[in-house]
Length: 589
Image (tube, rainbow, N blue to C red):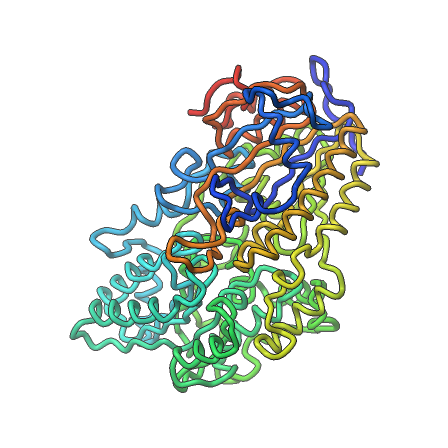
């Protein structure tokens, strides 16, 4: 991919590639206990951190001490477009890092809730369709209070509206959490759901059913190597095909007896549920996009396009697939009579009604790089490939001019174990979650690929890199695995930064949110979910300088672009919310 950057007035400072390296899920916490970055031996990161400009006695011992600057960034809260109290997430973090003026979808959603009832014309139209046909309204989503992918209060607000408008049957497809919530918390949420639904329905003649259950690892799959998980979810919901159990508690017990947490509950059909019927309504009520996209594609994408997507995916289950059959076991189902709705637009061009649409974002890191003819390589493992697309903002699906997306698969041994674990989890030999057993995942192969790109790159090259290990291993709650992963991240960073500096380039190293630095809750349970902590920022390349201590994730994109071009671009200065992170730059709004 050979392109020439637009001529820029002024002198470019660096003669080699630039890089934004995202240590996904690596926050900052003072306490050392259960803090994997603090417990791990990370000599390279320690040297970089010691280069904080205002620390007396530091800044002259490390390999890059004279060209390293360090600060800590705010990653959550209103200053990055998130509601107060919401935890960070991969999707939000990457979108904010793109430099867009980010507004969390919860603002729109919660502004539409009046007296506990969700008032939205798209949802009203869907419910009215069910009322007109005497059919059921199905609600699928993550029953959780984590506010990362969903909020159970949104479910209750929709339930109230459904009952208000006279629907006679409500069907729940229960996605259990255990990753953004304590690992075995599903029974509490089940009890609350039943009690709240009973209170909402009162004496009205409304049938309420929990028809299916499945853990979020399967029901909210986002890995192109694991479309089979998405299909397992699709089949239990649409056709009632899957393991049969009487009650959701039975599915949880089966998982718990194997030592599995809520996120790994096998999708199951409950209480004789036979699948959807003609003219039923299905509403996906999650508000986060990346882990809802695959299921929605399987539900609404044109079959020809979906079949091609599956056939060419990294999931060998679909090799040789001719045509995906949506209602293979239900010949009486007229699929086109179903009314399917997304709470948000989970991917660009989604072919169904959307209750809450986001504004188009006109400027972003990815778009500025493309407009100035910079070659951008986005390098990640399978789990975070979708996240890197958000560095172009929320509406960009296809690669931009000059953009190449490179997804590094896990090594064969890891891929094999992941698939076998899905079939045998909890059995002898399959007691450990995949990333607890293999905390390095694909980082060694990914690092090798990055070094190859650096070697072939020049001043018109930018690498956007996601190291997924801190987040994916942090979600296991295993401190030993977390320490191993942080040591691998440290070695990877040393190799990447060393190669960049040898080519005359620069790096910005940060994170999208916290996770692995806090592996235990205040109650002593394993902490498998994201935190609200600050995240580190290292700038390696320009002479050491004082950085602002009030900076946020939104300041990263304008700073990277200023380093790349040797000046603030007028469009960036005018349109991006974030400001330069150097202490002599302007503060964020």
